[in-house]
Figure 1: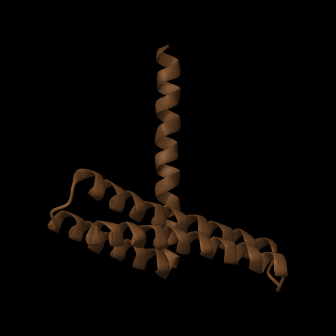
Figure 2 (figure 1 turned 180 degrees about the horizontal axis):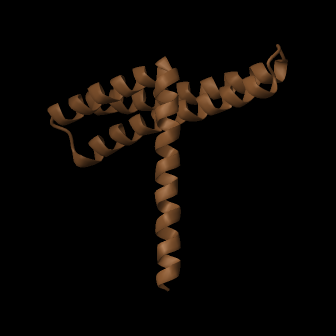
Length: 120
């Protein structure tokens, strides 16, 4: 049992390291990710400055993290598409546009949540 726990702890540690490496790599090259992080910091500050319920805070903070996740997925898609299809290809464009739409929809969801909280 101890060996299983040790192996799982090592696997978890590797996952954390690889995830952090991915975030750092995207941070270094993706201005949009840095902009979304700033937007999330400002949103989080506002969430705690306003008199909101715990559920309202959780939804807004969670959707902010979802935007970051979508942006990282979009970045991964763009990197792979650029690697396998350096020239112009309609399928490559579609893949990149879909990744961008993913980020836009996550941002729209966060915007809707803010609107409902502030106007509701």
